[in-house]
Length: 154
View (tube, rainbow, N blue to C red):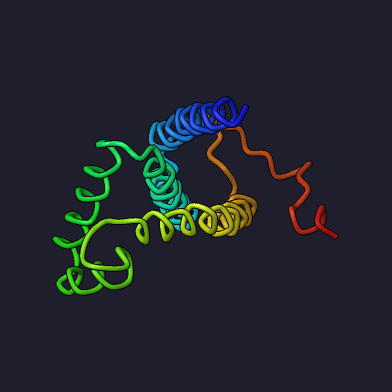
């Protein structure tokens, strides 16, 4: 039963990424990154990066060769991006001088905590969506019969 739930969780995450990719490509197609919706687009991109990292942290629990090489590749990318990443990665992320059990414990903690960060970013994304509006592919201006999000929350 545990294996079934694990595979359901992994495949559900893959299906969720398909929906996120479709949502992103729709935004690119209709120009959602243009003025005045840049804050909405930036928060959406930050949300995507958080999804991606959470997916990576979950991938590390397969305990296989793919897990080890995935961790090494991501940490090498971070090492190239940040000058002091070698010292930070060996103490804070790895929990030692190599990828070991402490690393997996920390990644499990990250995989547990990231959905809360994602939830906050999704809420900010929705606030910006209701502030700036979404792109209308038909080009129809609809300012008459609208209800703001803030009235719904009251």
